[in-house]
Image (cartoon, rainbow, N blue to C red; front, side, top):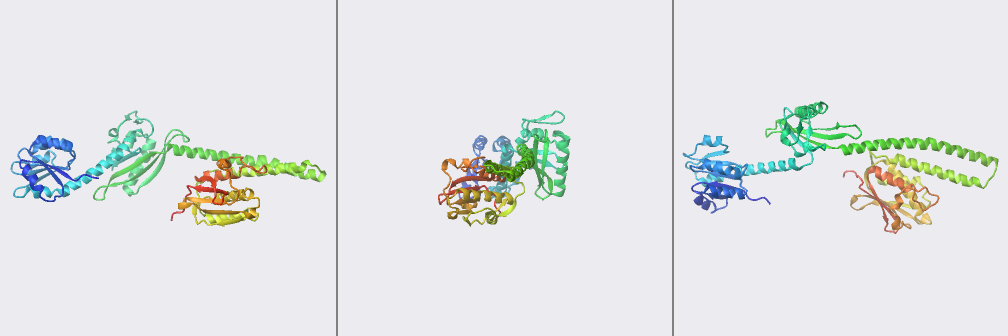
Amino acid sequence: MEEPLCVLYYGPDAAALEQRWETTDRPFALSAFDDARAARAFAAETAVDALVCSGPDAMAVVDDVRDAVGHVPVVVLDDVETDAVAALAEGVTHCLSVADRDRIEVIESLDPVVTRYRDERRERTMLDSLLDNIPLSVYFKDRQSRFLRVSDAMTSMMGDPYIESPDGVRYYAPADIVGTTDFDVFPNHLAEPATQDDRSVMENEEPIDRVEHAYGPAFDGSYVATSKAPWYDDQGDVVGLVGVTRDISERKQYEHQLERQNERLERFAKVISHDLRNPLEVAKSRLRFAREECESEHFDAIDRSLDRMDDLIADVLTITRYGETVEDPDLVDVATVAGDAWDVIDSQGATLAVNTRLVIHADTGRLSQLFENLFRNSVEHGAEDPADLTVTVDDLPHKSGFYVADDGVGIPEDERESVFESGFTTDEKGTGLGLDIVQSIVDAHGWVVEAVESEGGGARFEFKNVAEKDR
């Protein structure tokens, strides 16, 4: 809680003035002294919002006490013994004539001034705390694009404890930057677009955002994201700009890694589609010709093996294609996609109950594949007779996502984390990739999936961190 306003008064009439001050409610507290040392000691130990001095030695006391009170209004009550012009020249903020006026009334009239200065000081200290501690490069520039003030983090944002200019000058502290321009501090390829952005912001009075490749190779170099906005004075005129620059190198490097990974996945998919599928089709054709020419007990085993290879190739292709990060999701009605997916699979008499009303941001095709795999998993493994099985799609509590559950036999607790691993299966005919595909789709969306027990004792797959439509 903020302390009440406190004004320090020095003058020969201190005792009488303080006694009168305390007889009724006042806009601020007043501590009065007629001894300069006592006044200075009080200011050193107490937060003071204004200093008021009067008397023949008023300016001497101002000089003695001012350092202790800090940046607050300094008021001299002008009388015949005080040189008002000299007082103002020495940094006094207000010089008031008391002449025939009551000093209590004069001091009380300072309330708006004292309040305004405290508000300004609070805003100034907030800005100081921000610039001293925030781990971002924050700066203010004037109309000539000169740095007026910068945050402590600016000089060390790129890793080194300094910024080194193209001329070899090193800037270690924020004070070193003040008064310079981008051309003094940074290479031309960075300074030129930055200065053009400055001009655009101040002339058009529109904020801008820019991502720049600062240093090093494109793949693993340094990248920054900068936002700039106009800086206005009290009259609404543009006097400069305020900017924020942050290091996004890790994010950009991750994006580049994803791009390379996706490229490798695409090449891998092409190899599977052509270099593996073509020989497989040849083998199937040869098997058909062999059946026409003769009979053998080995043909059925070969046929099953070829079908299993075909299923494995199809699943691996699905993982490859659906494992890429979703960059441009659709606005999808979960209930509609779930219903359409149910129509695709062989439900074998099982029942689907869709209760969700979620509309989410997702890739429609991948979400459909997710539901198809989960539904097949329930139908094939949930119950001996699928006709006794009910599969439910519903919202998680608090609308944090959705779940798919069945009332079948469930998944043993010690296997719930393993079911998403590639190759995990309890069916010798399965590929073990169905739930691995689900995990790939979840990762591509940035979701989280967890296998738990459903209310009916069956399997329940919960999907969290799902981006929903703004309501």
